[in-house]
Amino acid sequence: MSIQVAPSSGSGVPTGDVSLLTNLETTQQGATSFTLNAGSVSSTWDGLPGGTYQVHAHYPGDGTFGSSDSTPTTVTVSPEGSTTALSVFAFDTHGNLIPFSTQPYGNPLYLRADVSGLSGHGVASGTVIFTDNGGMISFAPFNINNDGTATTAQGVFTIPAGQQSILAHYNGDAGFNASDSAAVPITVTKALTTVVLTPSSSVSQGTPVTLVANIATSSSGLGPSGTVTFLSGGTPIPTAGNPVLAEPFNGNGNIQNGTFVAAQGLARLNTVLPVGQNVITAQYSGDSNYTGSVSAAITVNVQADFVFAATAPSITIASPGGSGTAMLTVTGQPGYGGTINFSAASCAGLPRESACSFSPASVTSSGSTTLTISTTAAHSARLEGPAGWTTGLGATLAGIFLLGKKSRRRNRSRFLSLIAVACLITIASCGGGSGGGGGGGNKDPGTSACTSTVTVTATSGTLTHTTALTLTIQ
Image (tube, rainbow, N blue to C red; front, top):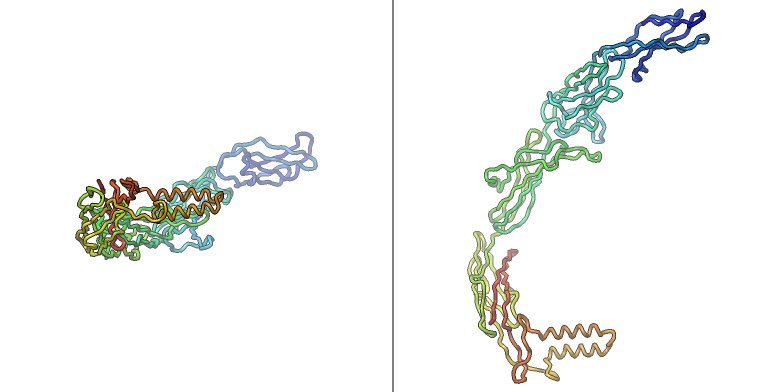
Protein backbone atom coordinates (compact mmCIF):
# COMPACT_ATOMS: atom_id res chain seq x y z
CA MET A 1 0.00 0.00 0.00
CA SER A 2 1.02 3.59 -0.52
CA ILE A 3 -0.49 6.31 1.68
CA GLN A 4 0.14 10.03 1.36
CA VAL A 5 -1.28 12.74 3.67
CA ALA A 6 -1.15 16.31 2.38
CA PRO A 7 -2.64 19.62 3.59
CA SER A 8 -5.84 20.62 1.86
CA SER A 9 -4.56 24.24 1.82
CA GLY A 10 -1.42 26.09 2.70
CA SER A 11 1.91 24.43 3.21
CA GLY A 12 3.51 22.10 5.69
CA VAL A 13 3.96 18.37 6.11
CA PRO A 14 1.57 16.27 8.30
CA THR A 15 3.25 14.12 10.94
CA GLY A 16 2.29 11.21 13.14
CA ASP A 17 0.69 7.88 12.30
CA VAL A 18 -1.88 6.76 9.77
CA SER A 19 -4.12 3.69 10.21
CA LEU A 20 -5.40 1.14 7.73
CA LEU A 21 -9.05 0.20 8.50
CA THR A 22 -11.71 -2.08 6.98
CA ASN A 23 -15.48 -1.89 6.94
CA LEU A 24 -15.96 -5.15 8.89
CA GLU A 25 -16.20 -4.88 12.63
CA THR A 26 -14.74 -8.32 13.11
CA THR A 27 -11.53 -7.19 11.41
CA GLN A 28 -11.13 -3.91 13.26
CA GLN A 29 -8.87 -5.73 15.66
CA GLY A 30 -6.66 -6.58 12.70
CA ALA A 31 -6.31 -2.97 11.51
CA THR A 32 -2.75 -1.72 11.56
CA SER A 33 -1.01 1.68 11.69
CA PHE A 34 2.12 3.16 10.07
CA THR A 35 4.31 6.16 10.87
CA LEU A 36 4.40 8.89 8.24
CA ASN A 37 7.72 9.81 6.76
CA ALA A 38 7.60 13.22 5.06
CA GLY A 39 3.81 12.86 4.94
CA SER A 40 3.71 9.42 3.27
CA VAL A 41 4.34 5.73 3.80
CA SER A 42 4.69 2.68 1.58
CA SER A 43 4.46 -0.79 3.15
CA THR A 44 2.84 -4.25 3.08
CA TRP A 45 0.40 -5.95 5.47
CA ASP A 46 -0.90 -9.53 5.62
CA GLY A 47 -3.44 -9.15 8.47
CA LEU A 48 -6.68 -9.67 6.50
CA PRO A 49 -8.18 -13.17 6.39
CA GLY A 50 -10.02 -14.33 3.28
CA GLY A 51 -12.97 -12.26 2.16
CA THR A 52 -13.89 -9.01 0.40
CA TYR A 53 -13.33 -5.72 2.26
CA GLN A 54 -13.66 -1.97 1.88
CA VAL A 55 -10.25 -0.70 3.00
CA HIS A 56 -9.39 2.95 3.71
CA ALA A 57 -6.66 4.98 5.42
CA HIS A 58 -7.44 7.15 8.42
CA TYR A 59 -5.24 10.06 9.56
CA PRO A 60 -6.17 11.21 13.10
CA GLY A 61 -4.35 14.58 12.72
CA ASP A 62 -1.51 16.23 14.65
CA GLY A 63 -0.97 19.60 16.33
CA THR A 64 -1.18 21.41 13.00
CA PHE A 65 -3.41 19.37 10.74
CA GLY A 66 -6.90 17.95 11.33
CA SER A 67 -8.04 14.35 10.65
CA SER A 68 -9.01 12.94 7.27
CA ASP A 69 -9.94 9.63 5.55
CA SER A 70 -9.11 8.27 2.14
CA THR A 71 -11.65 7.00 -0.36
CA PRO A 72 -12.36 3.25 0.35
CA THR A 73 -10.79 0.69 -1.92
CA THR A 74 -12.24 -2.80 -2.50
CA VAL A 75 -9.84 -5.58 -1.58
CA THR A 76 -10.55 -9.30 -2.03
CA VAL A 77 -8.44 -11.81 -0.10
CA SER A 78 -8.61 -15.48 -1.09
CA PRO A 79 -9.22 -18.06 1.73
CA GLU A 80 -6.05 -19.34 3.25
CA GLY A 81 -5.20 -22.84 4.27
CA SER A 82 -6.18 -24.12 7.73
CA THR A 83 -5.05 -26.79 10.12
CA THR A 84 -7.31 -28.83 12.40
CA ALA A 85 -5.96 -30.48 15.53
CA LEU A 86 -8.05 -33.23 17.21
CA SER A 87 -7.83 -34.18 20.89
CA VAL A 88 -9.66 -37.11 22.53
CA PHE A 89 -10.33 -37.13 26.27
CA ALA A 90 -12.21 -39.24 28.79
CA PHE A 91 -13.90 -38.23 32.05
CA ASP A 92 -12.75 -39.26 35.51
CA THR A 93 -15.19 -40.13 38.30
CA HIS A 94 -15.54 -36.44 39.15
CA GLY A 95 -16.31 -35.37 35.58
CA ASN A 96 -12.84 -33.92 34.92
CA LEU A 97 -11.16 -34.40 31.55
CA ILE A 98 -8.27 -36.86 31.44
CA PRO A 99 -6.26 -38.27 28.51
CA PHE A 100 -8.14 -41.07 26.80
CA SER A 101 -7.16 -44.66 27.34
CA THR A 102 -8.98 -47.85 26.45
CA GLN A 103 -12.44 -47.91 28.02
CA PRO A 104 -15.74 -49.84 27.72
CA TYR A 105 -18.55 -48.99 25.34
CA GLY A 106 -20.93 -46.33 26.62
CA ASN A 107 -18.36 -44.44 28.69
CA PRO A 108 -18.39 -40.82 27.50
CA LEU A 109 -15.62 -39.49 25.24
CA TYR A 110 -14.88 -35.78 24.90
CA LEU A 111 -13.72 -34.64 21.44
CA ARG A 112 -12.10 -31.28 20.75
CA ALA A 113 -11.05 -29.76 17.42
CA ASP A 114 -8.89 -26.60 17.29
CA VAL A 115 -8.85 -24.85 13.89
CA SER A 116 -6.29 -22.19 12.94
CA GLY A 117 -5.14 -20.47 9.73
CA LEU A 118 -1.70 -21.01 8.26
CA SER A 119 -0.94 -17.30 8.52
CA GLY A 120 -1.83 -17.12 12.18
CA HIS A 121 -4.19 -14.20 11.50
CA GLY A 122 -7.92 -14.26 12.11
CA VAL A 123 -10.19 -16.80 13.82
CA ALA A 124 -11.91 -19.62 11.97
CA SER A 125 -15.69 -19.89 12.08
CA GLY A 126 -18.23 -22.43 10.83
CA THR A 127 -18.59 -26.08 11.84
CA VAL A 128 -16.65 -29.28 12.45
CA ILE A 129 -17.78 -32.85 11.80
CA PHE A 130 -16.37 -35.69 13.91
CA THR A 131 -16.25 -39.09 12.25
CA ASP A 132 -15.58 -42.61 13.45
CA ASN A 133 -14.11 -44.93 10.82
CA GLY A 134 -15.64 -42.63 8.22
CA GLY A 135 -19.13 -42.42 9.74
CA MET A 136 -20.51 -39.29 11.40
CA ILE A 137 -20.50 -39.50 15.17
CA SER A 138 -23.41 -37.07 15.43
CA PHE A 139 -26.32 -36.30 13.15
CA ALA A 140 -25.39 -32.60 13.19
CA PRO A 141 -22.04 -30.78 12.95
CA PHE A 142 -20.57 -28.95 15.94
CA ASN A 143 -20.22 -25.15 15.88
CA ILE A 144 -16.85 -23.43 16.30
CA ASN A 145 -16.70 -20.91 19.13
CA ASN A 146 -14.95 -17.53 19.13
CA ASP A 147 -11.65 -19.22 19.95
CA GLY A 148 -11.75 -21.39 16.82
CA THR A 149 -12.64 -24.52 18.82
CA ALA A 150 -15.44 -27.08 18.43
CA THR A 151 -16.23 -29.64 21.18
CA THR A 152 -18.70 -32.40 22.02
CA ALA A 153 -19.84 -30.51 25.10
CA GLN A 154 -21.37 -33.36 27.14
CA GLY A 155 -19.43 -36.20 25.63
CA VAL A 156 -20.14 -38.95 23.11
CA PHE A 157 -21.56 -42.26 24.37
CA THR A 158 -22.05 -44.26 21.18
CA ILE A 159 -18.55 -44.95 19.81
CA PRO A 160 -18.89 -48.67 18.94
CA ALA A 161 -16.73 -51.30 20.53
CA GLY A 162 -13.58 -52.20 18.58
CA GLN A 163 -10.61 -50.47 16.99
CA GLN A 164 -11.77 -47.00 16.01
CA SER A 165 -10.22 -44.13 14.09
CA ILE A 166 -11.54 -40.70 15.09
CA LEU A 167 -11.14 -37.75 12.73
CA ALA A 168 -12.25 -34.10 12.78
CA HIS A 169 -13.19 -32.39 9.51
CA TYR A 170 -13.39 -28.58 9.36
CA ASN A 171 -15.89 -27.41 6.73
CA GLY A 172 -14.15 -24.08 6.08
CA ASP A 173 -15.55 -20.54 5.80
CA ALA A 174 -14.93 -17.42 3.68
CA GLY A 175 -11.47 -16.92 5.14
CA PHE A 176 -10.23 -20.46 5.71
CA ASN A 177 -10.19 -23.52 3.53
CA ALA A 178 -11.49 -26.84 4.82
CA SER A 179 -9.07 -29.22 6.48
CA ASP A 180 -8.92 -32.60 8.20
CA SER A 181 -7.17 -33.53 11.40
CA ALA A 182 -4.83 -36.42 11.73
CA ALA A 183 -6.73 -39.59 12.68
CA VAL A 184 -6.61 -40.55 16.36
CA PRO A 185 -6.80 -44.33 16.92
CA ILE A 186 -8.68 -45.51 20.02
CA THR A 187 -9.87 -48.84 21.39
CA VAL A 188 -13.35 -49.32 22.87
CA THR A 189 -14.04 -52.60 24.65
CA LYS A 190 -17.41 -54.29 25.10
CA ALA A 191 -19.39 -53.20 28.13
CA LEU A 192 -20.07 -55.79 30.82
CA THR A 193 -23.61 -56.93 31.56
CA THR A 194 -25.39 -58.76 34.35
CA VAL A 195 -28.70 -60.58 34.10
CA VAL A 196 -31.23 -60.37 36.91
CA LEU A 197 -33.99 -62.97 36.61
CA THR A 198 -37.42 -62.77 38.27
CA PRO A 199 -39.72 -64.01 39.73
CA SER A 200 -38.90 -66.70 42.28
CA SER A 201 -42.22 -68.10 43.41
CA SER A 202 -44.58 -71.01 43.84
CA VAL A 203 -47.48 -71.61 41.49
CA SER A 204 -50.08 -74.29 41.04
CA GLN A 205 -49.92 -76.78 38.21
CA GLY A 206 -50.88 -75.37 34.81
CA THR A 207 -50.55 -71.73 35.89
CA PRO A 208 -48.61 -69.61 33.35
CA VAL A 209 -45.38 -68.09 34.67
CA THR A 210 -43.84 -64.90 33.26
CA LEU A 211 -40.05 -64.99 33.41
CA VAL A 212 -38.39 -61.58 33.16
CA ALA A 213 -34.67 -61.11 32.46
CA ASN A 214 -33.30 -57.62 33.05
CA ILE A 215 -29.97 -57.08 31.28
CA ALA A 216 -28.26 -54.43 33.40
CA THR A 217 -25.12 -52.51 32.53
CA SER A 218 -23.24 -49.42 33.61
CA SER A 219 -22.96 -48.34 29.96
CA SER A 220 -24.66 -45.12 28.90
CA GLY A 221 -24.69 -46.07 25.23
CA LEU A 222 -27.44 -47.69 23.19
CA GLY A 223 -29.30 -50.40 25.09
CA PRO A 224 -28.30 -54.06 24.79
CA SER A 225 -29.83 -56.07 21.96
CA GLY A 226 -29.49 -59.70 20.95
CA THR A 227 -31.22 -62.75 22.39
CA VAL A 228 -31.96 -64.26 25.79
CA THR A 229 -32.34 -68.00 26.32
CA PHE A 230 -34.30 -69.17 29.36
CA LEU A 231 -33.22 -72.55 30.69
CA SER A 232 -34.78 -74.97 33.16
CA GLY A 233 -32.26 -77.33 34.72
CA GLY A 234 -29.79 -76.33 32.00
CA THR A 235 -32.20 -77.20 29.16
CA PRO A 236 -33.63 -74.38 27.04
CA ILE A 237 -37.32 -73.78 27.62
CA PRO A 238 -39.20 -74.16 24.30
CA THR A 239 -40.32 -70.85 22.80
CA ALA A 240 -42.11 -72.15 19.69
CA GLY A 241 -38.94 -71.57 17.64
CA ASN A 242 -38.88 -67.84 18.27
CA PRO A 243 -35.88 -66.41 20.13
CA VAL A 244 -36.66 -64.11 23.03
CA LEU A 245 -35.26 -60.72 22.11
CA ALA A 246 -33.52 -58.51 24.64
CA GLU A 247 -34.97 -55.24 23.43
CA PRO A 248 -33.71 -51.93 24.85
CA PHE A 249 -36.43 -50.53 27.11
CA ASN A 250 -34.52 -47.60 28.57
CA GLY A 251 -33.58 -46.15 25.19
CA ASN A 252 -30.12 -44.68 24.90
CA GLY A 253 -28.02 -43.98 27.92
CA ASN A 254 -27.62 -40.28 28.43
CA ILE A 255 -27.02 -37.55 30.94
CA GLN A 256 -30.00 -36.59 33.07
CA ASN A 257 -29.58 -33.82 35.62
CA GLY A 258 -25.81 -34.18 35.36
CA THR A 259 -25.88 -37.94 36.08
CA PHE A 260 -24.88 -40.66 33.63
CA VAL A 261 -27.94 -42.87 33.13
CA ALA A 262 -27.17 -46.40 32.01
CA ALA A 263 -29.03 -48.23 29.27
CA GLN A 264 -30.79 -51.52 30.03
CA GLY A 265 -32.45 -54.33 28.14
CA LEU A 266 -35.43 -56.54 28.93
CA ALA A 267 -36.64 -59.97 27.83
CA ARG A 268 -39.86 -61.75 28.80
CA LEU A 269 -41.10 -65.30 28.39
CA ASN A 270 -44.57 -66.60 29.25
CA THR A 271 -44.51 -70.35 29.79
CA VAL A 272 -46.06 -73.24 31.72
CA LEU A 273 -43.56 -75.20 33.80
CA PRO A 274 -43.81 -78.86 34.86
CA VAL A 275 -44.64 -79.99 38.38
CA GLY A 276 -41.75 -79.83 40.83
CA GLN A 277 -38.88 -77.49 41.56
CA ASN A 278 -37.79 -75.79 38.35
CA VAL A 279 -34.30 -74.27 38.53
CA ILE A 280 -34.40 -71.43 36.00
CA THR A 281 -31.52 -69.38 34.53
CA ALA A 282 -31.40 -66.77 31.76
CA GLN A 283 -28.48 -66.54 29.32
CA TYR A 284 -27.89 -63.29 27.41
CA SER A 285 -26.07 -63.76 24.10
CA GLY A 286 -24.40 -60.34 24.03
CA ASP A 287 -24.05 -58.18 20.90
CA SER A 288 -21.41 -56.09 19.17
CA ASN A 289 -21.19 -53.67 22.11
CA TYR A 290 -22.03 -55.85 25.11
CA THR A 291 -20.64 -59.04 26.60
CA GLY A 292 -22.91 -61.99 27.22
CA SER A 293 -23.82 -63.04 30.77
CA VAL A 294 -25.81 -65.61 32.72
CA SER A 295 -28.17 -64.89 35.60
CA ALA A 296 -28.10 -66.47 39.01
CA ALA A 297 -30.54 -69.37 39.27
CA ILE A 298 -34.03 -68.95 40.69
CA THR A 299 -36.43 -71.70 41.72
CA VAL A 300 -40.04 -71.79 40.62
CA ASN A 301 -41.93 -74.43 42.60
CA VAL A 302 -44.89 -75.83 40.68
CA GLN A 303 -47.34 -77.68 42.92
CA ALA A 304 -49.30 -80.62 41.54
CA ASP A 305 -52.98 -79.68 41.56
CA PHE A 306 -56.34 -81.40 41.59
CA VAL A 307 -59.74 -80.83 39.99
CA PHE A 308 -62.78 -80.66 42.27
CA ALA A 309 -66.30 -80.99 40.86
CA ALA A 310 -69.85 -82.17 41.58
CA THR A 311 -71.32 -84.85 39.34
CA ALA A 312 -74.71 -83.09 39.45
CA PRO A 313 -75.42 -79.38 39.64
CA SER A 314 -78.22 -79.56 42.23
CA ILE A 315 -79.81 -81.35 45.15
CA THR A 316 -83.60 -81.50 45.66
CA ILE A 317 -85.20 -82.42 49.01
CA ALA A 318 -88.91 -83.27 48.86
CA SER A 319 -89.79 -81.57 52.16
CA PRO A 320 -88.19 -80.19 55.33
CA GLY A 321 -86.91 -83.03 57.46
CA GLY A 322 -85.62 -84.93 54.48
CA SER A 323 -82.12 -85.17 53.08
CA GLY A 324 -80.41 -85.16 49.72
CA THR A 325 -77.08 -86.31 48.34
CA ALA A 326 -74.60 -85.45 45.61
CA MET A 327 -71.34 -87.05 44.60
CA LEU A 328 -68.21 -84.90 44.60
CA THR A 329 -65.09 -86.01 42.73
CA VAL A 330 -61.43 -85.20 43.30
CA THR A 331 -59.19 -85.81 40.27
CA GLY A 332 -55.51 -85.45 41.05
CA GLN A 333 -53.31 -84.27 38.19
CA PRO A 334 -49.98 -86.06 37.55
CA GLY A 335 -47.78 -85.81 40.61
CA TYR A 336 -50.56 -84.86 43.04
CA GLY A 337 -50.74 -86.97 46.20
CA GLY A 338 -52.37 -84.71 48.77
CA THR A 339 -55.24 -85.49 51.13
CA ILE A 340 -58.44 -83.45 51.39
CA ASN A 341 -60.39 -83.67 54.65
CA PHE A 342 -64.09 -82.80 54.57
CA SER A 343 -66.17 -81.66 57.54
CA ALA A 344 -69.30 -79.67 58.30
CA ALA A 345 -67.13 -76.55 58.02
CA SER A 346 -66.52 -77.38 54.35
CA CYS A 347 -70.07 -76.26 53.49
CA ALA A 348 -71.22 -72.65 53.21
CA GLY A 349 -74.67 -71.22 52.40
CA LEU A 350 -76.75 -73.94 54.15
CA PRO A 351 -80.33 -73.01 55.15
CA ARG A 352 -81.28 -72.70 58.82
CA GLU A 353 -81.46 -75.91 60.80
CA SER A 354 -79.65 -77.96 58.16
CA ALA A 355 -76.27 -79.66 58.11
CA CYS A 356 -73.90 -81.41 55.75
CA SER A 357 -71.74 -84.51 56.06
CA PHE A 358 -69.37 -86.45 53.83
CA SER A 359 -68.71 -90.12 53.27
CA PRO A 360 -65.85 -90.83 53.22
CA ALA A 361 -64.59 -87.83 55.21
CA SER A 362 -61.31 -87.64 53.27
CA VAL A 363 -59.94 -88.30 49.79
CA THR A 364 -56.26 -88.87 48.94
CA SER A 365 -54.87 -88.22 45.44
CA SER A 366 -58.07 -89.00 43.51
CA GLY A 367 -61.47 -90.33 44.41
CA SER A 368 -64.98 -89.31 45.37
CA THR A 369 -67.11 -88.56 48.41
CA THR A 370 -70.86 -88.39 48.92
CA LEU A 371 -72.20 -85.12 50.23
CA THR A 372 -75.37 -85.43 52.33
CA ILE A 373 -77.42 -82.40 53.30
CA SER A 374 -79.92 -83.01 56.13
CA THR A 375 -82.82 -80.72 57.01
CA THR A 376 -85.13 -80.38 60.05
CA ALA A 377 -88.91 -80.73 59.99
CA ALA A 378 -91.18 -78.44 62.01
CA HIS A 379 -91.56 -79.67 65.61
CA SER A 380 -92.82 -78.60 69.02
CA ALA A 381 -90.59 -76.20 70.91
CA ARG A 382 -90.31 -76.29 74.73
CA LEU A 383 -91.14 -72.92 76.25
CA GLU A 384 -89.69 -71.44 79.43
CA GLY A 385 -90.32 -68.18 81.25
CA PRO A 386 -93.45 -66.03 81.61
CA ALA A 387 -95.90 -65.14 78.88
CA GLY A 388 -94.77 -67.94 76.55
CA TRP A 389 -91.33 -66.43 75.77
CA THR A 390 -88.49 -68.81 74.90
CA THR A 391 -85.64 -68.79 77.35
CA GLY A 392 -83.15 -67.14 74.97
CA LEU A 393 -85.53 -64.56 73.56
CA GLY A 394 -87.08 -63.86 76.98
CA ALA A 395 -83.69 -63.23 78.50
CA THR A 396 -82.77 -60.95 75.64
CA LEU A 397 -85.91 -58.84 75.89
CA ALA A 398 -85.73 -58.79 79.68
CA GLY A 399 -82.22 -57.38 79.43
CA ILE A 400 -83.42 -54.80 76.94
CA PHE A 401 -86.29 -53.83 79.28
CA LEU A 402 -83.97 -53.37 82.25
CA LEU A 403 -81.49 -51.39 80.17
CA GLY A 404 -84.18 -49.09 78.88
CA LYS A 405 -85.64 -48.62 82.39
CA LYS A 406 -82.30 -47.77 83.94
CA SER A 407 -81.66 -44.80 81.73
CA ARG A 408 -84.52 -44.20 79.32
CA ARG A 409 -83.40 -40.97 77.77
CA ARG A 410 -79.73 -41.82 77.36
CA ASN A 411 -80.32 -45.40 76.20
CA ARG A 412 -83.48 -44.86 74.18
CA SER A 413 -81.69 -45.26 70.87
CA ARG A 414 -79.72 -48.29 72.05
CA PHE A 415 -82.91 -49.81 73.45
CA LEU A 416 -84.72 -49.56 70.11
CA SER A 417 -81.73 -51.05 68.27
CA LEU A 418 -81.64 -54.08 70.57
CA ILE A 419 -85.35 -54.62 70.09
CA ALA A 420 -84.74 -54.70 66.34
CA VAL A 421 -82.02 -57.33 66.81
CA ALA A 422 -84.32 -59.40 68.98
CA CYS A 423 -87.01 -59.26 66.32
CA LEU A 424 -84.56 -60.49 63.70
CA ILE A 425 -83.85 -63.56 65.83
CA THR A 426 -87.42 -64.73 65.23
CA ILE A 427 -87.18 -64.49 61.43
CA ALA A 428 -86.50 -67.84 59.75
CA SER A 429 -83.67 -67.94 57.21
CA CYS A 430 -83.98 -69.02 53.54
CA GLY A 431 -87.60 -67.99 53.05
CA GLY A 432 -88.45 -67.48 56.74
CA GLY A 433 -91.14 -69.13 58.78
CA SER A 434 -93.56 -68.39 61.66
CA GLY A 435 -92.91 -69.37 65.20
CA GLY A 436 -96.49 -70.47 65.92
CA GLY A 437 -98.35 -73.57 64.88
CA GLY A 438 -101.94 -74.68 64.71
CA GLY A 439 -104.07 -75.07 67.80
CA GLY A 440 -102.29 -72.25 69.59
CA GLY A 441 -99.25 -74.41 70.39
CA ASN A 442 -95.64 -73.19 69.92
CA LYS A 443 -93.58 -74.84 67.17
CA ASP A 444 -90.05 -74.61 65.76
CA PRO A 445 -90.66 -74.27 62.00
CA GLY A 446 -87.48 -76.21 61.23
CA THR A 447 -85.87 -75.79 57.83
CA SER A 448 -87.94 -73.62 55.53
CA ALA A 449 -88.87 -74.53 52.00
CA CYS A 450 -86.50 -72.52 49.84
CA THR A 451 -83.80 -72.54 47.18
CA SER A 452 -80.21 -71.62 48.04
CA THR A 453 -76.68 -72.03 46.76
CA VAL A 454 -74.39 -74.27 48.78
CA THR A 455 -70.64 -73.91 48.26
CA VAL A 456 -68.30 -76.79 49.15
CA THR A 457 -64.58 -76.05 49.61
CA ALA A 458 -61.78 -78.59 49.14
CA THR A 459 -58.40 -77.59 50.59
CA SER A 460 -55.05 -79.35 50.23
CA GLY A 461 -52.11 -77.42 51.60
CA THR A 462 -52.12 -74.07 49.84
CA LEU A 463 -54.40 -75.34 47.06
CA THR A 464 -58.10 -74.50 47.37
CA HIS A 465 -60.97 -75.26 44.99
CA THR A 466 -64.72 -74.88 45.36
CA THR A 467 -67.82 -76.24 43.72
CA ALA A 468 -71.33 -74.90 44.02
CA LEU A 469 -74.67 -76.75 44.04
CA THR A 470 -78.23 -75.46 43.96
CA LEU A 471 -80.18 -76.78 46.94
CA THR A 472 -84.00 -76.82 46.61
CA ILE A 473 -86.21 -77.71 49.59
CA GLN A 474 -89.82 -78.18 48.49
